[in-house]
Image 1 (cartoon, rainbow, N blue to C red):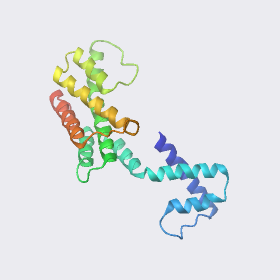
Image 2: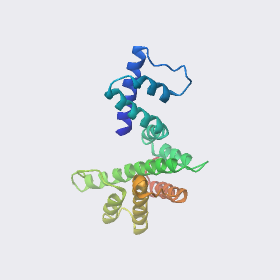
Image 3: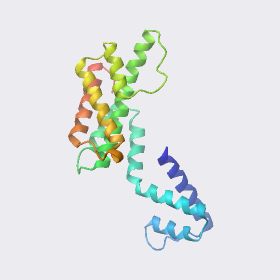
Image 4: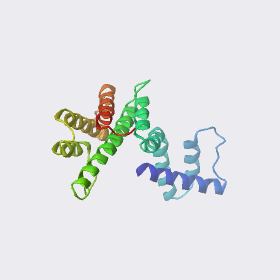
Length: 197
C-alpha cells in the first residue's frame, strides 16, 4: 500500500511538472535531481511530495520485486521459480526478503485452499481473518491434514517470514540457506498435498 501511494504521488507530481513544462532534465538522466530542482521554488506541499518521490526512487528495486511477486503469486510454480531466481547469483538481503515474502504468500495460498476445503466439508464458516503460516499449520495438524514434521516446517517458515517482515527493526535478515530451506519445504508441502502447480 505504501509503495502504491508513493508511486501515485510520484506520477501526480511528475505529470504536473511536465504539463507546466518546467521540469529540466537537461542536466542528465538523474530524475531525482531534476525533480528536486523543480520543487525548490514551489509550495510546501510539493516539497513534501518530493520527499515521497525520493523515497520511491530509493525503493525502486523493492517496488519492482513487489510487482513481480504480485503477478507471480497467481501461479504457485511460477512464484517458487521467481523466489528461487532471487536467491541465485549475488547475495542481497533485499532479494532474500523478497524471496521469503513470495514463498510465504504462495505457501499460505496453498494451505488456505486446504483449510477452506476442510471447513466446507465440516460445514464450518471460513476463518474471519487471514491466518499466518503458523496458525494455518496448527489448524491443519489438529485436523490430521499434516504430521508433526510438517507442522514444524510450517512453524519454522513462519519464524523466517517474521524475521524478514521485521528485518529493519530486529536487524536480522534470514540467511540464504534458511530462505532456500523455506522454499524447499514449501515445494515439498505442495507435492505431498497433491496440490497443482
